[in-house]
Length: 325
Ligand SMILES: [Zn+2]
Ligand SMILES: [Zn+2]
Image (cartoon, rainbow, N blue to C red; front, side, top):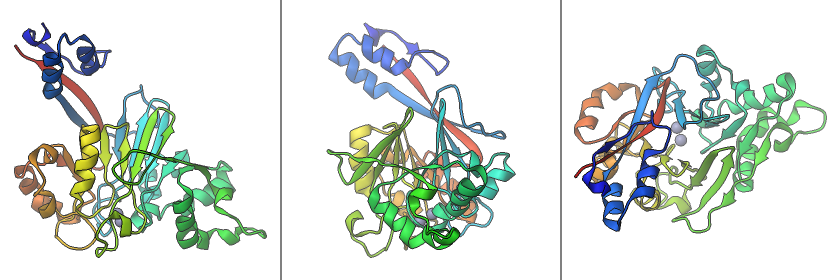
């Protein structure tokens, strides 16, 4: 009986230990025990040289972890890498400079997904699109549905690029749109696509205005679910339904959640997040925070959160499964 053995795996095992154990469970009791005993550990390490490919494990690199107004932190943009595939989640006004200072370039990025139209998330797109058309002559890909493409182009990107040539340009002159499809049975409006081996699901969120009662009345914004394992909220107000409804479906290994250090406005605050159940809090890595985050560092840890996201660090997930007699 598996439940009488003690087994300890780390990612150094070639097999996915959790899947292996699930396949070899001998009874429903075993299965239940395994599910309860599954433990995932997020591992972060400082990354000096960013590579856009790896040996196949899912890796998340934080270009920055700062809020829109942070001056001592970089903007909260995330690079997802897995095998030969990569995608940049959001490209703020400082993103290109930050990348350059770290030894890679915005023009190296092939795939983009944008969560909403604030400048710390889209401010670098004009450089990316103009560089692509006039310097590298490589059109980058963007995961975007028709509804948000219209918003992004008409309200933000068009001004600096449409009249670059004698014939007005359109969005598709500058980007290859990758159209996500609607997920039928999601708890709320959700879009999904694959970038090679990386699965992305984009649930709508409630970011702004702060008067909107739900995501339905909010302006366009989405979070990102990566490989059904990780929830990256991007920017959202406190929205327990987002966390609970999708966690019930996916039982996330880890949740990266934006965290404002005061309450009010268009972000979830630390005090609001503290009211979450412990089983969710302990999987939350706080991100998108203000320069004064150190003043709250210990308070958050004492409140049961996993940790604070660190910029220029890469995050990977290890499964450690321990089955005890
Ligand atoms: Zn933001
Ligand atoms: Zn925002």
